Image 1 (cartoon, helix red, strand yellow):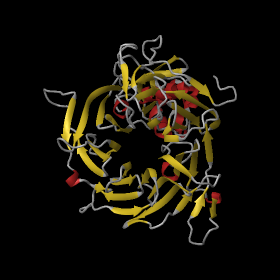
Image 2 (image 1 turned 180 degrees about the horizontal axis):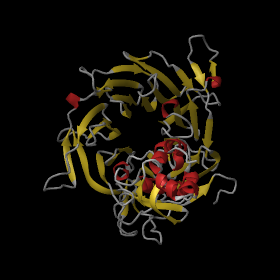
Image 3 (image 1 turned 60 degrees about the vertical axis):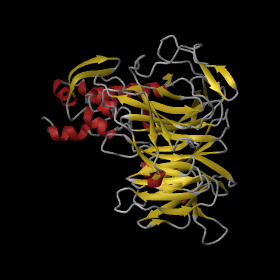
Length: 505
């Protein structure tokens, strides 16, 4: 008796990769349900045409978050995407990747910030914004990243030009030309970058600032952090003033709250059933969650996300998990980087980790982490955190010294590992963005990328001048660039080490 095709499709919906491969090898009919015109190569079935009920179903059930590959993936077949994801996951499990700097070193010691969209990678460093275009591909190779141009934002001739201190993209119908910039002088401005179209493509453009039309202003306080979610903009100043603006409101006037302490970072989540913002500060309660009602913030913290050490500290980085993470729904997971070198993960659904502070009945409830991650060989402060990677299960952290980036798989948290940025300078890693196959980061000297995906070539990333021909101009003089090209002529040498006792792979 033949099983009904509709029933088979329902079964396929629950199969993992290995089961799909075995099913496609069973008979011609089942092969047609999964894929068409298949051959076997490297234990993977390669297909020139993929059926709607096989690989596409697998993709829906095993999503991979990647802004820089989004446009390319829309051109790939379902099977090509599954193959790319599988090879990428394998590279993550083996810590195999291509390391590339994205520019020659900047002059001076800067504190850069990174923002990524579907079509643009933007890096703010000092007074300059560097823009890299994401070029999609149709041959199942990774999107190319090419330098587009740089921008300087001018406040007025003859005046001191403040640094850009924070950056975020505004969704603008896929054009990705609209940015929010936070400045050293306390203004948060919306900037529309010029189009690349036209006969005269300039490599650098000066843009006149318009502080009189700024969306938010924090007085003389530095804008420390910007976060954007569901057309809502949040900014945090150095000394704890917070502004929240509904960007699609008829009268987008900001609501505010004052944290009253030295503040470092923020994370806004408007997609949760109870929207909230989380703030990282230096205080006795350095990580606090505020719920957001239709009329603005709750006047006091809703939850204190605590460290088991229960002593004053600081939190420098906050993020959430991707939607397909093993940790659970992203809006319920808070990942934080602390001064003591720990990455602490909180699950807002876990009530049994809550307890009432003993100081008073009016104190907010507290929440302890469900998972704590550390690099035992480098207990340096964590400056930035991000989530994604293979199987959407990795947490990564940028540390305060020696340009070290640490990685943990939350499924095997004791088997973490760390790697130095290309050039191996003594800088912190100030900003990172982790996708399914790429990590973009920035030290005080330059931006860089680790690419775990297949198909990387010399043309995937901007070319860099050969080692020895360029130098770094810093405040203390000129030093040689320490880049060393690998034998494959594509990646650059970086050192990495395991978090296990031996410290080596």
